Image (tube, rainbow, N blue to C red):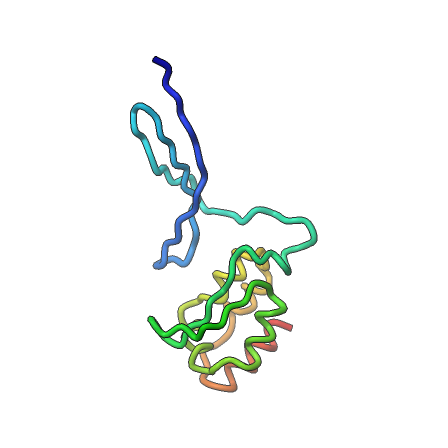
Length: 134
């Protein structure tokens, strides 16, 4: 009998580090599965990373308090920042969620600019975010 091995590639998220890891899942007669192969990198798309749309960002006010608002591109993200509840912005900045999402979208420079933002409150934070995104 012939041993047949199939390989599929998946990604897993580590909430502690905020990074995605590439996971190679192998199934064979020996049953080896789930070897972590390193950091996951989003596939490069033609036409730039501004409209990937593969990784939507969902806004929350707090844990278990979704706002029901999501964005799928960086221009939409900039637009939503202008009108979202300031508590949601504070929540995501403190957790580093915006930087992680921008890294997944391939916007590494924008993510680096957001990492430098000092945690402010309310409208001061919104102003800092908008300045960093422009």
